[in-house]
Length: 330
Image (cartoon, rainbow, N blue to C red):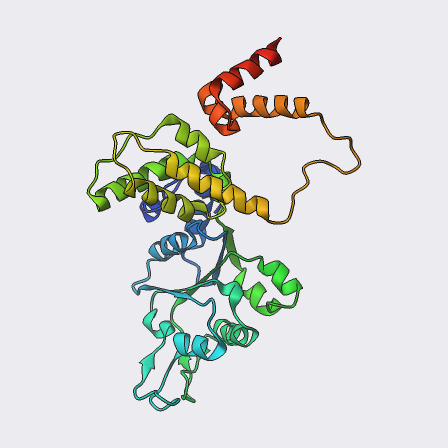
């Protein structure tokens, strides 16, 4: 592990070919994945919704060199009985309607990887079953009194704070410590701004091919606009925006209307929630003139000195911005 991190190299970059990035923090994630890929212990993948946790799980599986498949299971919303039936399977006659035996996902993942997504949503009863599976390495199909051995690597993922959930009594401590033997966190898109142009270009190419259209030219303003957005839905949100824009695309230059509308709607949603305080209550408020000057300065920095881009960020015309800049410099 030390050698990989100190030399900043990847031994199997091909395993991460489906993850579009050039971000340093993502490269550190890749190096950690390579380091723990051969371990038999569980791996906990943390990260916000839409960051690509399943892609990391697939890279882990590829690097593990296991001959079996990767079997993904989203456990969110599964009650205890459905969870047990999904993972462990059942014998014939185990319950009403069980007219034949069915293999569970554990059996289907034999010699491979079992990927349990949204693990933070598991009920307490299901947590007990998962803990026993990890500790004992065995399970019972519903209706059977004969244990079966698990022969699969277990990888789990969540967008929730499991440490906080176990502190609140919502997640078992013993299961939490069992799952976090190997753990990593996928950074959100807002912390990987250099990836936005890469992802946009990739999604545009895919969308153009799928819709039988020519890939459009991207206006310079668009990258600045997107890099100044927080992307609460992360990569998945950018994908949705891009496909929507491509579906409405008609000219050589990609229209920014869809992106402006999507970003504008999201800003409105954030503003309608609980109010945010940007100013300490025990400090005097700045004047409108001072705030305006600060906004203009920040917009110019984010736009790299381009007045056209800065005016779009501020929502004012370019002549109005030029007038404010002249006052600032005088």
